[in-house]
Image 1 (tube, helix red, strand yellow):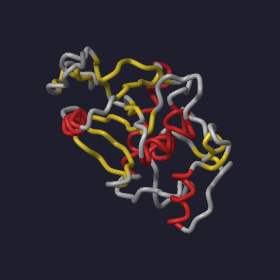
Image 2 (cartoon, one colour; image 1 turned 180 degrees about the vertical axis):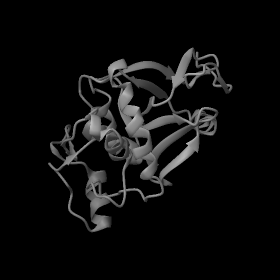
Image 3 (spheres, helix red, strand yellow; image 1 turned 45 degrees about the vertical axis):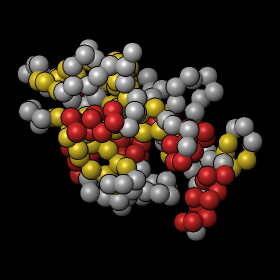
Length: 211
């Protein structure tokens, strides 16, 4: 039975909040990994990045931050580029879209990294989405935005990117059309990151799921 997200209430002075009926105590710096769908960009990301041993596949990663009173999501998306959104609004929207969100947290010894990562993420807000997925300083894609924020602590690793569909052994049709429309070269083998790979970092752990 799916759990309802009814609201967000502040519960501690340590920047923690509980999502009602989910038993998840959200804290500053937590990560949101969103389960992938099977169609469009979501499906395309999943097909070429999912670990065959994993049951769950992710298509997006975001980060939670607080000003001590309200909670926000820092992320980069196709519609808004890199931006900051109220967490309560964010959760309501994704619930309406029937998306499943998995919450991860830095291991205790890496929590001091937030002192640098969150301010760094805020300096990157307001940039357009990077549709080429080739890293640059003027635009970001979702996992690139988060990886950069935590780069000084090496929380996430850059790995050679692939756009090959493992079922066919060829470049996925979605990505072929995507790069043809951009008139750009597919960055096969170039260093990058993706939500599935980042979820396997040994410096973070899962604390719960929101449905």
